[in-house]
Length: 206
Image (cartoon, rainbow, N blue to C red; front, side):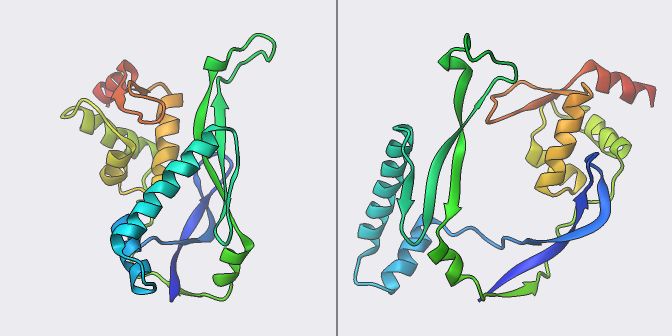
C-alpha cells in the first residue's frame, strides 16, 4: 500500500505559477459503491446487497441530519458538517434567508482514520499531470479559437483544451471572468461559460 504523489508548482499571490514546488497526492481511480461493497463483503459475512443497502441508508441519514443543522460523527471515520455561502454584500439586519444557501459538506477525518495512514508509504507517480506552461495570452487565444466552433465552455473542457490541472483551470476561469472575457450562464454549482464581446473583439484584433 502506497500513496502516489507528484510535484507541482505552487501559485504565488498573483495566481501565476512560482518556482516553489509542493507534493500532492495523485488519485489513480475512484472506488464505486459496488466495488466498496464487494471489498467489505470479502472481509465479512454480509452480502453485497446488504452492504449496499446500508451505505445508501447511511448517505440518506447523513444528509437528513446535516439538513437539521446537526453534525454527524462516524467513529473511526470522521465528522461531517454542512457549510453555507451568501451574497458578498449583506446586511445582517436586513438580509433574508433566501440570500444564504447550502455550499458544501465539510469533512474532518477522525484521528483513528489518520492513524491508520500515519505510516503509509509514498511513491512518485508515473502519471504526469502538470499543467502546460501556457501564458495567459496563449490561454485566451485557445479559448477564443474554441468559441469559434463551440457555443459553451466548461472548466473540464478548459482542462483538456489547455492541458491544465483542475486547480489551474479554475484559476484561469476566475481570471477570464474577472477580465470580462467569459460569463456564466449556468447555475452557481454547475457553471457553463460563454464568450463575451470583449473576448471576441480581442480575438478579431489579433
